[in-house]
Image (tube, rainbow over all chains, first blue to last red):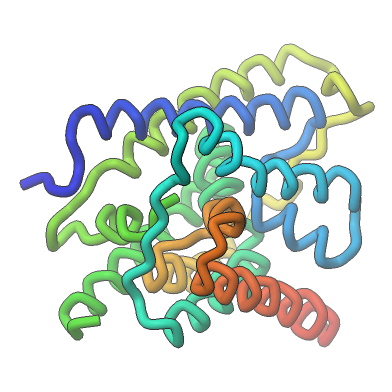
Length: 142
Length: 116
């Protein structure tokens, strides 16, 4: 039973993913770096490579503006979780990505593309705890 | 980028939404081409060398950190990239997430790393 998406939606997902892959590939071939968002933001907060990391974050922030220009509407972003949980989740994501040296972009996209065993272990771990968390929250009615 | 869809992807025992698998397939597929091209280059176009992660070991920090990240990712449906990219939409919950994410990173980098 699939829900919440049409075939049209899957094409959009695939194309969006390819754009993410293109930006990661470009960052690797031009700047020689892994496009890992948590690493980029973390280093920016530590004041390292300010211009490079700042430019990357600025590009991220301009993404929805480009989307608005292309499709005439803002992308859909809906959060259906109570604010205290969002606040806790943000902290866990920030702390966890720095401790585990990566997130869905660095370990997920680039790590898997590089066939890195560390990243494969990382992806298996965050997929497992993510699935567990969503499942427990659904059972708890959150 | 939409947290509801992300949480739908992780809800494999409920109303599963496979969209994110297509996103990941497209991203990893194209990134793999980039990695293949990189293996034929001695240096990147705009730098003197490639800066690739040196770490090889699968240790407690990797597993513990990614486990915590996964809990937060499942809880809100946000990972760092989409959270930042959603900031211009001006949603208070997104701003709250980004602020606490930055706090979590700072707490880790300034307190945990320094206490070693």
